[in-house]
Length: 230
Image (cartoon, rainbow, N blue to C red):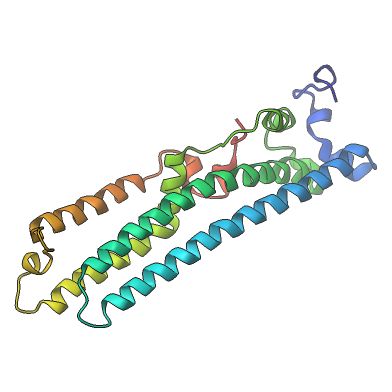
């Protein structure tokens, strides 16, 4: 359909959901295949996200278990924190790709299938077809790396890292009963004050980055998906 034939302000063209129900159209068939393809891509990238999360949980849990298995330095837990951070960077990048397909699926669900099921409610966005067309012509990621980082940090990694830090504090206390906390937190060549300050600064930075800067960063449904094609 050419640009001259489509007017996003025309209700009859914007609400093609009713057309799909009332009569058989070629566009409806194409839209169904399109939706199925986008769903397959979304599920594929969701699996990649879940794989990264599973690896992070497994590795970080194994490190904590090893740290408490005997006379093991608390530095092992700190190394686990760094590994968890690496997984977080990887998952943030993958989430940006996953969000491409997720946003397209939500646009089709909200404006096409929801309207087909109940045309009386209309569509969420009158120009959704033009927006989706533009997205196919010039695809781009719809969430910033910082936004994706914040989303995955808040949803998955902040609780994991918090648990590891609690384990680190307990390890320092439990395995160094004759020393103060700062003495027990020291590493070869690094005082406990420096180590503790570095860990505290690291956690504060994570807390700051976990604060969402937009509705898009708050979640995977609702307002987070509205108007994300642009």
